[in-house]
Image 1: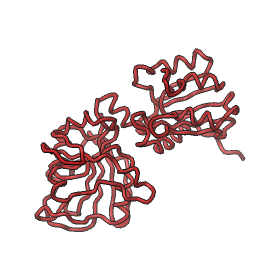
Image 2: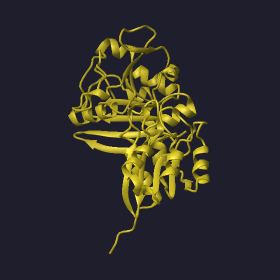
Image 3: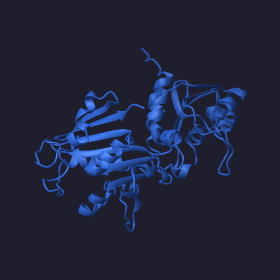
Image 4: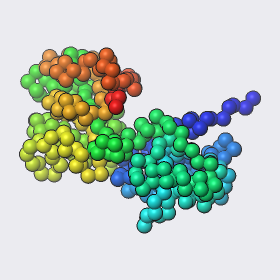
Length: 322
């Protein structure tokens, strides 16, 4: 008995998972994923390469070769329609390869392509369609935040004790979470373009703000400090709103301090919150209460999107409804 073939939505979800491999090295271009399917089998796949080229569609077409004739391409973002000195448009390459269909999950907000990629493929005889897909949108969150809000997609991360503390009673640095949770944080750092802490955290802890996972050390993000002063070797901004000026940053990971967390939350600039909770008591200030994060489950503006256990610690991620 043969199994049912995946639906268009399932192939788009697979393309979105591929897109994560592009992040963050594809900057300033969006990280796109693409899969070419023929007779129910994958014959080509790709994701945006470091520096933004080749595009995901070009990588998938190169893998498929002549077999792409009559096949279907699934990609997370509308194939580009504009000419570039770095290569032909993906819409024209798709037509030239003789693809029968193209299904994509997100219309490109870039005015050079928006709707034009779809039109160009259809004019060339490709059965092209936009199938709105949340998984694809989520995979392009940084690119879409830049296009829609003029700033990066911002994730606020906090590691908390059972009594809601992120530091000792006198503000001293303490180790809260275990090895599994810390490795999870470093994996998320590796997907960020920049990482930010407050000036107090920088002066008190002198954090490295790098990626310390074997093989991913070169993914360490740009370091940013929220302070009114200047610090040698790092980028500084005076207000949360100045994140809009961070060049080529699509994904910003905000890690430190209670005041910094409150500043970004009060400015309504946080798109995702990641909370790591450890079963230890510290006896410091309750950051959850101070920042109103203890009400997330009952706040209609936030939705739980992921939960898991990491050793003895728990992890929960919340997404902002905008």
